[in-house]
Length: 340
Image (cartoon, rainbow, N blue to C red; front, side, top):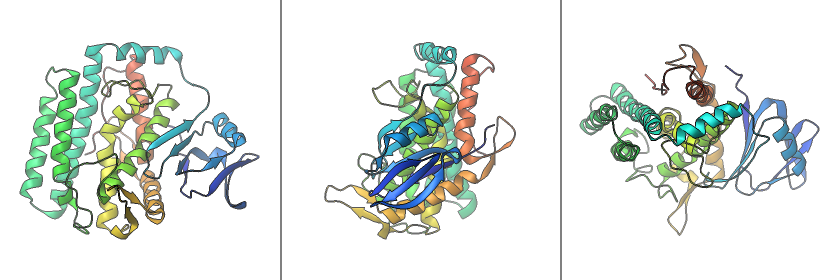
């Protein structure tokens, strides 16, 4: 297992990123505000318009620390990375497998099963901590039924439909998981482009962070993050990264969102509603979420397949590594990460 490095998040729209030797330097209006040795960084993620020197791009590409540009809502804009690494034979296996309908169906089933079971685990954890709730218990039972139905021989299209139904059931009770600030962060339904309430804005932001982590993890083991099995190919879409993210987001992102709201680490005042109806996080709130995200990545969990404790931030890498081993034929299947 590799060592977990830091990700540098730049939130100021006035920041300019430059190179000084082997360091990433952040300047605002010409004044140096911070510098970080590039060998300590796994990547750089910027929000909003942030200038970046070509010399720094070259340094980050050479050192394997890709720069990802997101807009203020956390939606992907562009990514600068170095040469393609990994074994070309592995990527050829990945591409051939993506054209195999039976294999794609099998992979899709594993990804969605992991998502459904982890979503159910979030609901069951609430019931253990806060006592009976009929609506949440019914939603958990429905998710279990979908998880069992996924094991039948069905098509990728059917799996996508079941994933959508599971998401509808899960998010229909998501507001019930809020024990503080429930009115301010209430969710009526999942909305993304743009998010129409505070909790959706928070979830979308965390999902963007997790997607970036999954892209980096897949590339680090030599896989192409664009060619997936559950998500259909689309120009510019990181299909495999989105596949991998499905099983991880209930535990890595949803639980963090609930914790931030329930412990009042963020408040309704930290969000701004635009005339279009879109809800955006203000800079102070974004920084608080990023700090919590970095802290969360340091926590350790027992990996159910590897049988060892790993930092949460390395779970995407562990799953990417297992997927690569499966594609190479080193193991007989792909075990999704299911939190217990």
